[in-house]
Length: 115
Image (cartoon, rainbow, N blue to C red; front, side):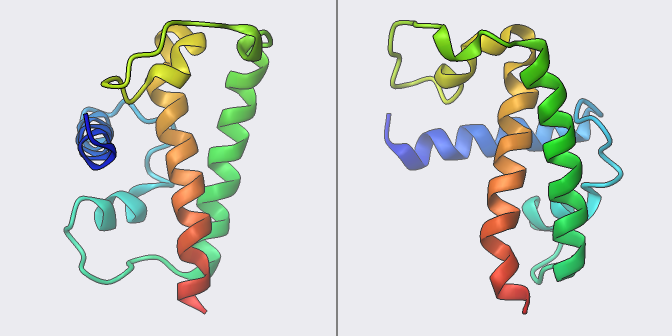
């Protein structure tokens, strides 16, 4: 599977999780998902909003990192078709952890464009 195909699968699953109310504190991330889903062609969030959303994502991620203290020692067989292969060590939380990390990373990358 090509990297962009995996990215499309990941994005579709993340948007579905948001629509289903599975993202913790999703009201804080509503502007991000408005943009990510294509409902807004411009960034509906400000430079300051990105810090608020990233801070919340990092706070939530810390709780998952504490819940899975041995996550870095987990080895698994590589499956190039699985966008969540690097998150297997988070068990049932692998999807949420991956979405929160994706949100945090993407917002940090977008932030300079909002200056």
